[in-house]
Image (cartoon, rainbow, N blue to C red):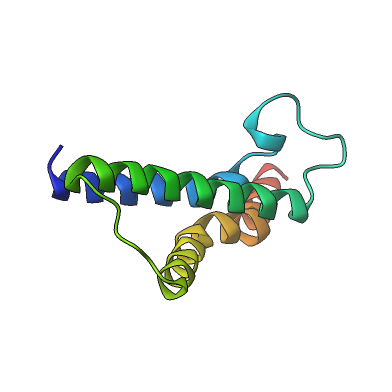
Length: 111
C-alpha cells in the first residue's frame, strides 16, 4: 500500500470512528440499547477507546509502509487527540442539537 493511500484511508477511518459513539445508542455498538439511553460517560469512554484503536491502526500502517515506528513525544498525542475531537464534532452536534431540531420540524409538518 502506498503511503498516500494509507494516509487517506487512515483519515477516513478516523473521521468515521470519531463520530460513531454519537450515532449509535447501543453500548459498544452491540446488543440492545439501554432503556434510559446511553449516558455521556459511556459515549466518552467509547470515543477514547476508538481513539486508541485508530492509533493502533495508524501504528500498523506506519510499520507496513515505512518498516519501523517513529518515536513520538507527548505533543504528538495531544495534537492527535485534539484532531480526533475536531473529527467528532459533526456527530456531537447531530446528537445534541440537530437530531432534536429535525424531529421537532417533522412533528410540525405532521400537524
